[in-house]
Amino acid sequence: MLDPGSQASAEDNTSTHVDVKQPLIEARNIKKYFPIRRGAFNRVVGNVRAVDDVSLEVHEGETFGLVGESGCGKSTLGRVLLRLQDVTAGQIYFSGRDLLTLNARELRKTRREMQIIFQDPFGSLNPRMTVSDIISEPLAVHHVATGRARDERVAELLQLVGLDPSRRDRYPHEFSGGQRQRISIARSIALHPRFIVADEPVSALDVSVQSQVINLLGELQERLGLTYLFIAHGLNVVRHISDRVGVMYLGKMVELAGTDALFASPAHPYTAALLSAIPVPNPHRERSRVVLQGDIPSPARPPSGCRFRTRCPHAQQRCSEEEPQLQEIAPRHHVACHFPLL
Image 1 (cartoon, one colour):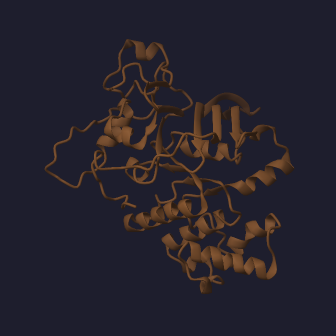
Image 2: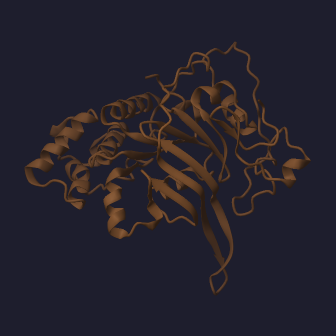
Image 3: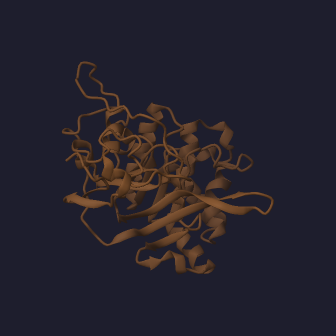
């Protein structure tokens, strides 16, 4: 697997494509609003539209990359899919089961198949628990293993993520950032899950360590048959691990395509701007830079029509009057833009 810091050309990049199957995760018209309350009576005066009518499918065995600027709603979407946060509207299906209709007992059982890797490997690990306790906690919560079987499972998981099992009785602060993230990964795979949301798992790590963690995730996917929703704010990271990529802006999905197609021919102006910001290894290579003007609008008061129009260099009158819908402009390539670049 390639180092995420390297910037090979789109023409040289070859992604692994999976066959189209029944989606493992299917989200339909997902909305997640956070109420804004003011006044002595704590009245709702508005909503922060963190995720606003987003649909996507993640097929078994694939890695779906989800990218966008900070605050675009990608992490909120990942947590909603796992029902770590309640959805405002929409439908979520996991392996054909409607997650929103499950009772507490059914949801608890389903959680064994759905896990998350958090962004901050230090903040997500309890500093008062040993590595052994941290990794074995899911086993205890779900009554999977106890005693010697639990200890053997912890040792097996540590070996899977490249850590020495003899260090199981140490605490998180005794490990480096990359090692702590490996501990988080070991905890996430303890229950043999099928689906993992990796919420910016390498953004807090050095570039050299990022490549090691991404390579580890790829190896575990092949070995354990995992399916990932890989969330990142940089396209250069998702490029080397994702089969398909979705681009979000201000709570909306603006482009969705296979990795090769997205990097070779971005159709949305926002995607083109993100790609133009990726550094190239050859300083003499000519490439036009797309510089976006203005600030990101507030998700509590999004612009009318297309939400990107206030920063888009190609915006026209129609963009302020009509909201673009996600449409297929090429096989498996969808874009929400009235004037796509293709």
